[in-house]
Image (tube, rainbow, N blue to C red; front, side):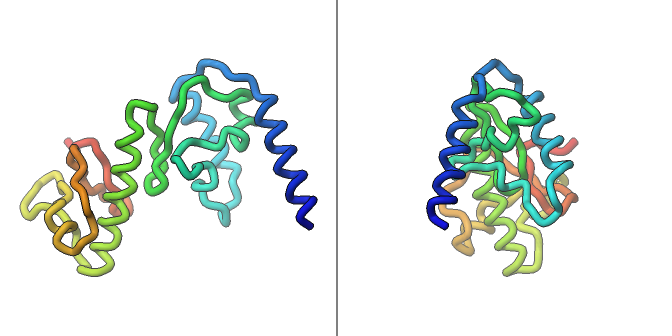
Length: 156
Protein backbone atom coordinates (compact mmCIF):
# COMPACT_ATOMS: atom_id res chain seq x y z
CA UNK A 1 0.00 0.00 0.00
CA UNK A 2 2.69 2.53 0.96
CA UNK A 3 4.83 1.59 -1.98
CA UNK A 4 1.96 2.22 -4.38
CA UNK A 5 1.41 5.71 -3.00
CA UNK A 6 5.13 6.43 -3.17
CA UNK A 7 5.19 5.40 -6.83
CA UNK A 8 2.33 7.78 -7.60
CA UNK A 9 4.30 10.59 -6.01
CA UNK A 10 7.34 9.77 -8.14
CA UNK A 11 5.17 9.63 -11.27
CA UNK A 12 3.68 13.01 -10.40
CA UNK A 13 7.13 14.51 -9.82
CA UNK A 14 8.29 13.07 -13.13
CA UNK A 15 5.28 14.57 -14.95
CA UNK A 16 5.95 17.91 -13.27
CA UNK A 17 9.56 17.87 -14.41
CA UNK A 18 8.51 17.05 -17.96
CA UNK A 19 6.27 20.09 -18.34
CA UNK A 20 8.02 22.88 -20.23
CA UNK A 21 7.97 26.36 -18.73
CA UNK A 22 6.73 29.15 -20.97
CA UNK A 23 5.30 32.66 -20.76
CA UNK A 24 1.57 32.56 -20.09
CA UNK A 25 -0.93 35.31 -19.37
CA UNK A 26 -3.29 35.25 -16.43
CA UNK A 27 -6.08 35.02 -18.98
CA UNK A 28 -4.67 31.77 -20.39
CA UNK A 29 -4.39 30.29 -16.90
CA UNK A 30 -7.91 31.47 -16.07
CA UNK A 31 -9.24 29.77 -19.22
CA UNK A 32 -7.47 26.53 -18.27
CA UNK A 33 -8.98 26.70 -14.77
CA UNK A 34 -12.44 27.21 -16.27
CA UNK A 35 -12.01 24.21 -18.59
CA UNK A 36 -10.73 22.10 -15.71
CA UNK A 37 -13.66 23.19 -13.56
CA UNK A 38 -16.17 22.32 -16.30
CA UNK A 39 -14.86 18.75 -16.45
CA UNK A 40 -14.50 18.35 -12.67
CA UNK A 41 -16.91 16.00 -10.92
CA UNK A 42 -19.47 17.84 -8.82
CA UNK A 43 -18.25 16.01 -5.70
CA UNK A 44 -14.75 17.46 -6.07
CA UNK A 45 -14.26 21.13 -5.13
CA UNK A 46 -12.20 23.42 -7.35
CA UNK A 47 -10.02 23.99 -4.30
CA UNK A 48 -8.05 20.84 -5.17
CA UNK A 49 -6.17 23.08 -7.61
CA UNK A 50 -4.86 25.30 -4.81
CA UNK A 51 -1.62 24.45 -3.03
CA UNK A 52 -1.02 25.41 0.63
CA UNK A 53 0.76 28.63 -0.43
CA UNK A 54 -2.19 29.56 -2.73
CA UNK A 55 -0.20 28.73 -5.87
CA UNK A 56 -1.88 26.56 -8.47
CA UNK A 57 -1.19 22.86 -9.01
CA UNK A 58 -0.15 23.02 -12.66
CA UNK A 59 0.04 19.23 -12.91
CA UNK A 60 -3.75 19.17 -12.75
CA UNK A 61 -3.95 21.87 -15.43
CA UNK A 62 -1.34 20.20 -17.67
CA UNK A 63 -3.91 18.82 -20.14
CA UNK A 64 -5.17 22.35 -20.75
CA UNK A 65 -1.95 24.37 -20.56
CA UNK A 66 0.57 21.86 -21.93
CA UNK A 67 3.18 23.75 -19.88
CA UNK A 68 3.87 25.51 -16.60
CA UNK A 69 3.58 29.30 -16.57
CA UNK A 70 6.78 31.27 -16.25
CA UNK A 71 5.08 33.61 -13.76
CA UNK A 72 3.56 32.58 -10.45
CA UNK A 73 -0.21 32.87 -10.08
CA UNK A 74 -2.24 32.62 -6.90
CA UNK A 75 -5.85 31.65 -6.24
CA UNK A 76 -8.15 32.59 -3.41
CA UNK A 77 -9.42 29.51 -1.58
CA UNK A 78 -12.68 31.28 -0.75
CA UNK A 79 -13.64 32.96 -4.03
CA UNK A 80 -11.46 31.07 -6.55
CA UNK A 81 -10.24 34.33 -8.05
CA UNK A 82 -6.89 34.21 -9.81
CA UNK A 83 -4.14 36.74 -9.04
CA UNK A 84 -0.70 37.64 -10.32
CA UNK A 85 2.39 37.65 -8.09
CA UNK A 86 2.00 41.35 -7.32
CA UNK A 87 -1.48 40.66 -5.88
CA UNK A 88 -0.58 37.71 -3.65
CA UNK A 89 -1.47 39.71 -0.53
CA UNK A 90 -4.88 40.49 -2.02
CA UNK A 91 -5.59 36.74 -2.36
CA UNK A 92 -4.63 36.25 1.29
CA UNK A 93 -6.74 39.23 2.42
CA UNK A 94 -9.77 37.98 0.50
CA UNK A 95 -9.54 34.58 2.18
CA UNK A 96 -9.15 36.10 5.65
CA UNK A 97 -11.99 38.60 5.28
CA UNK A 98 -14.33 36.12 3.57
CA UNK A 99 -13.91 33.65 6.42
CA UNK A 100 -14.55 36.43 8.94
CA UNK A 101 -17.66 37.56 7.04
CA UNK A 102 -19.01 33.99 6.90
CA UNK A 103 -18.44 33.50 10.63
CA UNK A 104 -20.03 36.86 11.44
CA UNK A 105 -23.13 35.98 9.44
CA UNK A 106 -23.38 32.59 11.17
CA UNK A 107 -23.16 34.24 14.59
CA UNK A 108 -25.11 37.46 14.08
CA UNK A 109 -27.54 36.50 11.28
CA UNK A 110 -26.87 39.83 9.57
CA UNK A 111 -24.42 41.30 7.08
CA UNK A 112 -21.24 42.83 8.49
CA UNK A 113 -21.47 45.97 6.40
CA UNK A 114 -21.18 49.63 7.30
CA UNK A 115 -24.68 50.80 8.14
CA UNK A 116 -26.16 52.88 5.34
CA UNK A 117 -23.34 52.23 2.87
CA UNK A 118 -24.90 51.92 -0.62
CA UNK A 119 -21.96 49.79 -1.84
CA UNK A 120 -22.22 47.27 1.04
CA UNK A 121 -18.70 47.95 2.27
CA UNK A 122 -17.51 45.37 4.82
CA UNK A 123 -17.22 46.81 8.34
CA UNK A 124 -13.87 45.76 9.77
CA UNK A 125 -15.01 47.18 13.10
CA UNK A 126 -17.91 44.70 13.32
CA UNK A 127 -15.59 41.81 12.49
CA UNK A 128 -12.94 42.94 14.98
CA UNK A 129 -15.52 43.44 17.71
CA UNK A 130 -16.29 39.69 17.61
CA UNK A 131 -12.62 38.73 17.31
CA UNK A 132 -13.09 37.46 13.76
CA UNK A 133 -10.47 39.76 12.24
CA UNK A 134 -7.15 40.39 13.97
CA UNK A 135 -5.58 42.76 11.43
CA UNK A 136 -7.25 45.15 9.01
CA UNK A 137 -6.41 44.79 5.32
CA UNK A 138 -5.10 47.90 3.57
CA UNK A 139 -8.05 47.96 1.17
CA UNK A 140 -11.82 47.94 1.47
CA UNK A 141 -13.95 44.93 0.55
CA UNK A 142 -17.58 44.84 -0.51
CA UNK A 143 -20.29 42.19 -0.28
CA UNK A 144 -21.82 40.96 -3.51
CA UNK A 145 -25.34 39.62 -3.91
CA UNK A 146 -23.87 36.35 -5.17
CA UNK A 147 -23.73 34.05 -2.13
CA UNK A 148 -22.45 36.98 -0.03
CA UNK A 149 -18.97 36.70 -1.48
CA UNK A 150 -16.64 39.61 -0.99
CA UNK A 151 -14.93 41.57 -3.73
CA UNK A 152 -12.19 44.18 -3.76
CA UNK A 153 -13.89 46.01 -6.64
CA UNK A 154 -16.27 48.76 -5.60
CA UNK A 155 -19.70 48.16 -7.13
CA UNK A 156 -20.92 50.84 -9.49
